[in-house]
Amino acid sequence: MKKEVRIFFTAIMFLTRIRVPPNVDHSPIYLSEAPRYFPVVGWIVGAVSALFYLLGTRFISTDAGVVAAIVAGALITGAFHEDGFADVCDGFGGGWTKEKILGIMKDSRIGAYGAIGLILMLGSKFVLIKELPAFTPSLNTTAAAPWNVFYDHRYAILAIVCAHSLGRLMPVLVMQAGTYARTGANAGAGADASAGAGAAAGAVDAGKSGAIAGQRMSSGGVIAAVIFALAPFGFLSWHYLLVIAPVLYATFELNRYFKRWIGGYTGDCLGAIEQVSEIMIYLGFVLIFRYF
Image 1: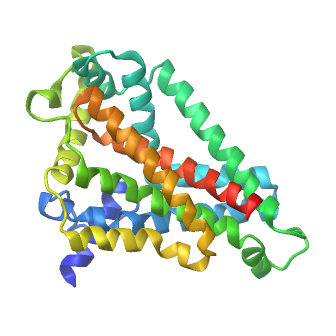
Image 2: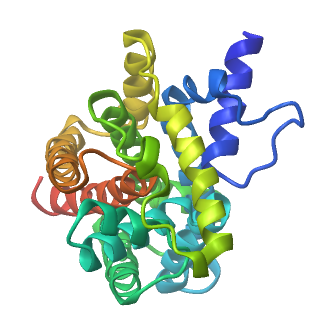
């Protein structure tokens, strides 16, 4: 039990800015087993995001609630996945060889492709999350008692938690089935002398990702991750499980794309997969709300 608790805290430390006990570090032994708890970390991030969504919606407006949810998610994770998404946009948008793509992704500076990608990604999240309350009839958050707000927004809350939880399962599946691209000389490919501090930080990040990617979890660990990811769906109708199919397909295509261009995935690629998965889940929830 103590080992499992240590592994769980390692997962929290790796994916978020939440403080953990001082004895928790980036030990490869625990990092290699931490991915099974990534969906549980998604519960935490999703719950915090949903809370800020409720507060903003209750006291200001739906738009403010949506922005609060997105900002809260970015702050609690240190924009961990958003940063990876931006790096992937820059790398694959500006590079035409494996070495160039990997080099661009290691650069700490954001380029035009990354900035445009972040704008489109965050804008998509805003639009889709904003649509969720529209499917709750007779919603009156300004007059409702505080405890009724949770019930009125139950579908939006569960959608946010499901998106963060299931979204974090997809990188775990890619790590199980894929190949880590930054190995040997590739770990430093394209490092620019003018980006010394950024390259050093990138090397540390590559080491952390490599510690996780170097070993695959046992089948029990993978099953545990899947169960954790799907647990929030237990509070919803079975129709919402339909979102899993397009999310898996998008993850499969992204993994295949990364493998074709750079021979596998990197930590940044995993972050991009998580962000795309979140958007696909929100889109799926909106479509199911509308047509089922």
